[in-house]
Length: 123
Image 1: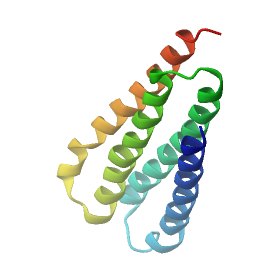
Image 2 (image 1 turned 90 degrees about the horizontal axis):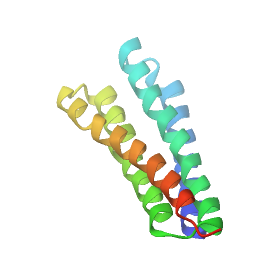
Image 3 (image 1 turned 30 degrees about the vertical axis):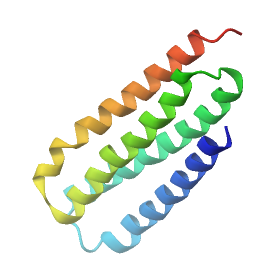
Image 4 (image 1 turned 90 degrees about the vertical axis):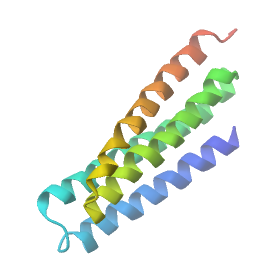
């Protein structure tokens, strides 16, 4: 589905922009621990942007609700997991650490949904 492919490509571009921002602009502003948190957000952001592209490919082979749900879970995971880590690193607001595991659960749910979508496919 072109929506998931375009969303994955856009998320990948955003992940590269944020990675460059972290490496060039935040390097002098954040301590090493906060910078590591930011980099973890970028890493998982990029992994799951590629996951969205995998969902687009899977949709062409195994078109079902599970495959579509995987895309939504990956997108929510990027927002919740990576987004909370970006904000935590920049603002130091520790309460955001409570949001991060919800994004991690969304990532896990996305991979499980993708597997179920493949197994439930008719072909």
